[in-house]
Amino acid sequence: MYIPKHFQLDDEEIIYDFIEKYGFATLFSQHNGEPYATHLPLTLNKGESALYGHFALPNEQWKDIENQQVLVVFQGPHCYISPSWYETTLAVPTWNYVSIHLYGKMEIIEDQKVIFDSLNDMVNKYERPDSSYNLNDVDPKYLEGMSKGIIAFKIKITKIEAKAKLSQNHPVERQELIIKNLESTSIQENIQVASLMKKNLQK
Image (cartoon, rainbow, N blue to C red):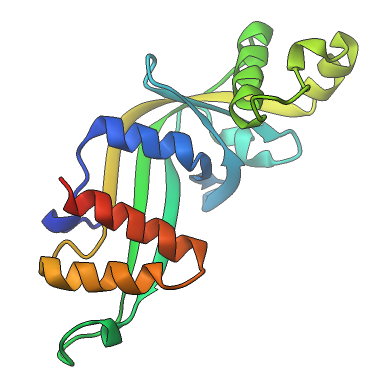
């Protein structure tokens, strides 16, 4: 990924927190000699420096993916930045965003306990704290049948690239103008980008 020095994100804790928050990713590999992508939720195991997830069995991306170097993209909030918000007409439009690229080796998982644990981790992550749903309460035979329809995997992370393009290459005064304009809208992504810009200014 192209990352100018202004936008380089190196803090591993921030990167991992971002992945936890924006866990719906795009997984790229080579399939039948062509680039191929699947959109799917992934969970992060910090201790193992690995991602866990699963394909639907009919999705043939899994058939030639094992041991490939794959790319996983986590995309956060993003929005248009208008030059009309600046104090000058010597400006052009741009786009602010945060994106994390993880590279790693793909491993297909066959151990049923590991598969269950990875599915349980995902359910626990996304179910509300007061939810009555618990994977341990699901009928084992039903769960076994459903599990036959997926291909579980683990990606051992080998490289991380992270980019936070939040107008850091502009003067502080201009960044504050951008934040003010983003916060004046009701668009949630604009407000989220403004929040990220504020945190960056407070460093």
